[in-house]
Length: 134
Image (cartoon, rainbow, N blue to C red; front, top):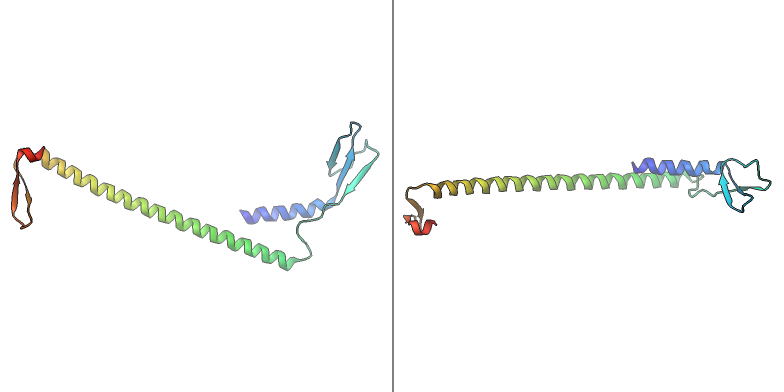
């Protein structure tokens, strides 16, 4: 997209050399146009110098290549960043789903009216009393 923009600007600079006319109307306002005003006696032709030396095509090609490479590297960087963000979001979604499953399991265990237990440091069952469940 940038390449196309630069080409349009370059083409615009070349066509700007076609002729720009300047005149002052009866109220003293200065006007510029691509066509001379027939109602004004004093019309000046304005020469606009191009911003790019059209004779130096090697330098222009090198500049265009540099711009293309910069655009491609920017696009690659943007694609990598988007991919990384998607991967982070997928990991966060997976972690959120895992925590939700654990919470539902814990809720089911706590809402069950039977006796609950946990394992102590020695690997033995330790019964949880009603006062600890709340």
